[in-house]
Length: 303
Ligand code: MN
Image (cartoon, rainbow, N blue to C red):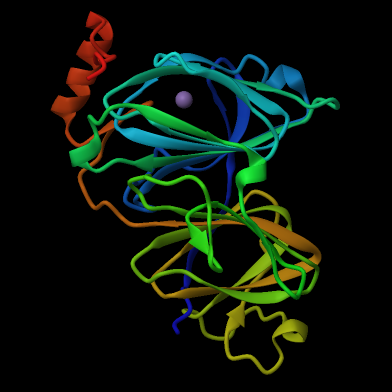
């Protein structure tokens, strides 16, 4: 087994999207090869409805898939396929924009005004950029939850883990998307297939991720006594950890425990031409998408 090095640890940055939604972006609109097949990850979390309720009114997407995971509050959605519904706490929506979709996503707070959700963008390979759009809503109750002896809880949002398989499938990036809660002080190793590109995103408590690539540095001596790996500083709320190659990661939960997403996928390794909500392979395909938007031909007729 080989431990994945932590290539980078960084905080999500505040940004504004849609019609004025305050959110934190862990990555996106930087080097798209960094976390290929993933393009963007946003953390929508707010307790002030004026900072999210204007939502994301009608907008187009082409060439990507989005995975929305709601933790509290809800998101009303509608799209050009005629779908409409509400994602509640614990629910997941996977949307394949493919050749083109217009949709809107309108967050709503819970009874105390809290709203929390994540949106991950997965790239589509050139062979599927213009595939027919489709989407899938998954209720939180359908998502497998595995509880380990040490109290660690893993929700298998997408993909397979510890013998359980989440209900969302058919995503080109082949994601494994886990929502992991670890009790205080627990230390654990999670396997991640070598071919996958992987990141973690801490959103409750704090966690330290062992790093095989560094010589002795800042060690948390109490927890790692007798261990050969180097566990660096704790990563707190809204921290992205980008992993290098290997086949496992080791995590140490802090005094308040830790909750984080552990996400990985198969790199697509193709050129990326990206303009806002449209991600293609070439500038010519981007120009075509813009022309289609102007000409009213963005939404392809159903086959
Ligand atoms: Mn959207």
